[in-house]
Length: 366
Image 1 (cartoon, rainbow, N blue to C red):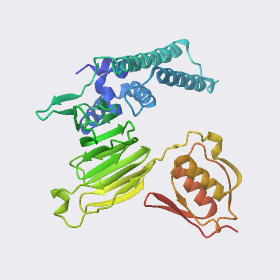
Image 2 (image 1 turned 180 degrees about the horizontal axis):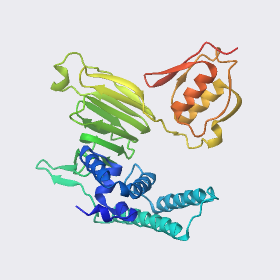
Image 3 (image 1 turned 90 degrees about the vertical axis):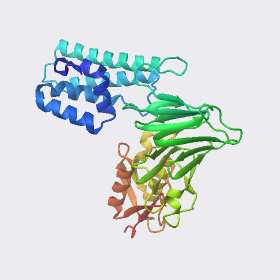
């Protein structure tokens, strides 16, 4: 274990164990760093700064393009510049500015090196790697025993980002009729579209079927709830007829259709599905602009229609009751749930999520 007492912010940024704690905290590394900070409170500033820098540049996918690296670092430097300009009565030394630039350059170098050595066309992978096993039946097994998500390239060009403590099994060559993989744990899939060969993910007691889309499946063995969440496209989820769920009684035999920002939870206890929304719905319509969420005496029905268009989520309401309701607000920086809360508070309404849809309850405006 390195002597962290001597570490600078730049050293923390480059340390794999520190990176693992920031990006994928576990009970073990959380306990270590909390104990270490208790013993060395004088190093709190360096740790906080390194943590903020790593989190600010963290992306969901482990492969980062050089353009994104440049954009992220430039954004960070601009923030530093703005912060300095907002403190006219505080002397900012040239040495301090140079240190910030050095840290930014270190982050750029680290991310750049990571991008170069994890490119698909580059042979070797530097850093944490998957454990690959060639099984006797010809199946490929990829196991992620690291503390960070790792990419798996599948035979059809699809990509699975495998979460820690997860295993993905698939054939060396998919069959002529379908593309089937088995998942234990969690993974985010980006599936190459092929209408003639559906892509199926078998995970514990559920099956997810798609033609080409991106979605996340979470099915760790110890969890009593399995989850499928969709980012783009459309997926179908249904229960497997396995001994684990059939002996418990009636199994939910519905085929659950999911669209962007929707997810389904499957309870192992009662073998039942519950369709809802993802925790933080994202804007999926790329034509939507920031000022589309600026409203000036805008009819609430128009406001809700903009939300539907932006997030791809059905919103059910009584247009006659909301006919006299209008909204003046700027909601560009709010999440979707915050947007809905503000709208409902402004018109004295409430909302609930039913079967992956938003239902507005209102008595109208006078």
